[in-house]
Image (cartoon, rainbow, N blue to C red):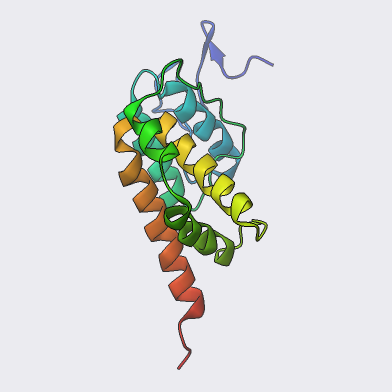
Length: 156
């Protein structure tokens, strides 16, 4: 014990060029991905761009969305982003729910369940990204649509 401590500071023996006191983590390391997702969420309040970039790097490295529960704080006042999301009508949310269902999300077929699923998903985007929620939702929807096209593409 203590083989990685030099003058009380951590030093990696596998990555000796890593400065003392730093722990090398890779977005490609499956054992580190859940920790990096959690760090991105905790860091969001300080540097949202860093958090977004780290989450994108994790997704690009093949990680799925955060495996740990994310704590989102519902704002005390209605924000413009939340107002936009909560004002969506059923005819706007139903097609999204159908796409999510086609992609494998377990959504009951009642219209109320479909709307609840989509509104919950979008409220999380609005709380997390504020006025930029549409861009992040659009990126996720584009990724889902591409996956659906790839699975439904005719072979030949």
